[in-house]
Amino acid sequence: MLEKEYPAHDMNTVFDLMQSTIDAGGTDEKAQDELLFLNHLFAALPAEAVEYGMMFLHGERELPDSVKEIIPLFIRLVNLAEYCETVDRLRDIPAQMTTEEVLARKDMMDSLDEHEKAFLKPLLGYQYSNQKVEKGPEETEGEGENGTDGGRLLLMNSQAAVFVCPDPYKTSIFYETKLGFKAAHLDDETMPHIRLTRDNIALVLVKGSGDIARPLRKFGIKYDMYIYCSEPYLLQNELSSLDVKITEALPDAEEAKQMNVNRQFVFEDCDGRHICVSQYLESYT
Image (cartoon, rainbow, N blue to C red; front, side):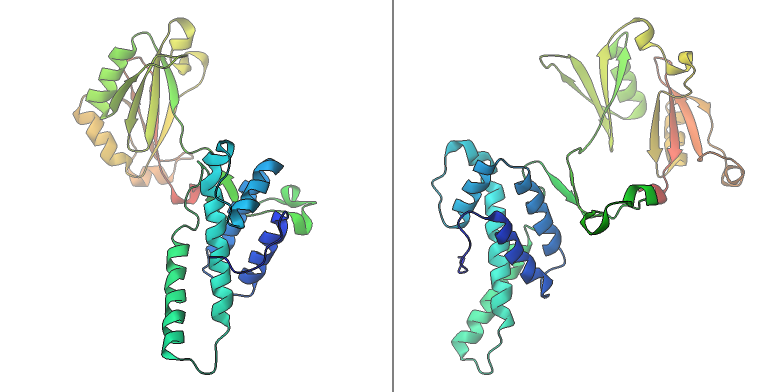
């Protein structure tokens, strides 16, 4: 339960109050990012939705159906507010405590763990990244104290290359039997397609003919797709054992040191596409 008096209509003041608690220290290291995450999400809401969030903070639970989908955001706000209030209460350490007061204090400390479990978990389809991005002088110029070099919302979770195929079923069988992909045959309203997945790779096969279905090297582009692989040697051996055509073999480690490209190999699929499998380097992350 919340005990502080919060303003009735000023969400910015609510965030300022929680920020002051975090600035005073003693909170989990993720609390700051959780605050920024919630602040980003509320900033993207229309004023009416923010007002309903304030009502929820003050104990109102009978909200209209129009905001039911964002109730989880309001719950996370209350969770962080309760967490900050608990941290503030724990800062006051009495000189003497009764047994009941000691047990109550322990319960408060234990409750912090429960609140912290929610910090930075994806919310409403959004995810938060606190990764620091290195910027050049031209990118940071003019940002000053108001610039941001940290947290951002991640809305793009995955991607899939689209291959146009004369016969998607034939291509799907090749990728399933030779390359270890799993297929899901899907029909939506706009584009019947086959989705192929393996590890972190996804492909979408659609039916088409003519130039759009030809390998990109016919147009001067060397590869149709790159796959980054932590162990390309193992993958090359796997594909070779299944009689997949290797058009460019993986160089050995010593030879690769003299090359001006990543250590890589290239294979050809049943439609003539050339797929480059390149050594994955941690420095790229």
